[in-house]
Image 1 (cartoon, protein in one colour):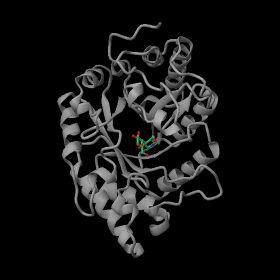
Image 2 (cartoon, rainbow, N blue to C red):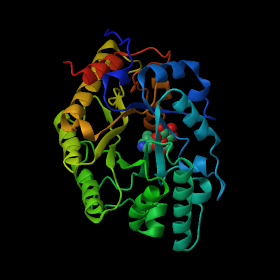
Image 3 (spheres, rainbow, N blue to C red):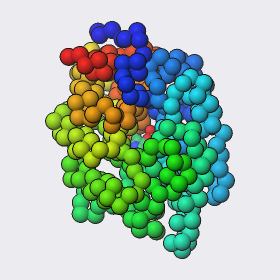
Amino acid sequence: MAQAPSVGLHTLADFPVGVAVPIDPWPNSVLQSPQRQALVEQHFSSLTAENGMKMAYLQPEPGQFEFGAADALLAYAKAHGLILHGHALVWHTQAAPWMDAHQGPAGSFTEILDAHIQTVAEHFAGQVHSWDVVNEAFTDDSPSAYRSTIWLDNIGPGYIERAFRLARAADPSAELYYNDYNISGALPAKLERVLAMLDDFLARGVPIDGLGFQVHIDTDSPSLSAMYDAFASAAKRGVKVRISELDIAVNQSEQYRALTPELARLQAERYRQVVQVYLQAVPPAQRGGITLWGLTDGDSWIPGFKQRPDWPLLFDDSFAAKPALAGMANGLRGQP
Ligand code: 9MR
């Protein structure tokens, strides 16, 4: 078994190395877990709330904002010298039950969108390093480029540009990202549609600083060359490129009941390669960083969502480092 680095992962990078964490009141909240805090403080320089800064939790009832749990995360981050990445101002999932049920004239959706972005981005202004302003606005399959959501269906595609303009006005210092999945090599045509939007925004001066590639992948696909092409094509535009939600599943064949040493080795190598591809494709000044989508395998969204056991992250359920941690460290160090 490869040895875990005794130093912190983040010390090996000149860009933020982050992790998504549950906050209160989730049972595995980082704020209630000394073991998770020890890992966070050793290895990471950036935090993202895995769920707690989505609309459903910041505005659980119309016009009622609840910032307590997110403010506690912010205070924890500050106390430990970590930056906070905001996720996400506009998404169709976890928008809140009242929002999903909302009926009304188109104007009322615009008012709700505006008020949410203004209130939230102003609350955290100067405190968060960056925001996912709009998350997952494109479909996986053409020809219908934009995903049909409460926002698209009631406001039209202009809601995306509107969200970026409002976010910049409310918090001029935060870096603003568009964030999506299956764009890091899996679906080149989807990435093309995202890049067309980016080019249009850049040409017209709509404020956008970068693209977030979620990179929920497995040990088989996408290929490293497809991943390189994806990151490089975004970097070519001169914007920041983040790996915003990294995890690497190993049980896509669904035949394993436990993480075998061979799978752990394959996964470690894949983590190393993904980091290397990122370093090769994205010039230093444009590296927005790499964030893992969870700390421990038991915290991961994948087993529940895919309805199978899996072990996609860097630490096991006992908070012990897996070979994947050493793989990622070697990637950051530029070692083979
Ligand atoms: O990890 C999150 C999980 O706990 C939630 O149940 C889920 C709700 O859809 O969202 C997960 O996080 C998602 C992220 O916010 C956006 N990109 C995909 C992530 C994994 O589904």
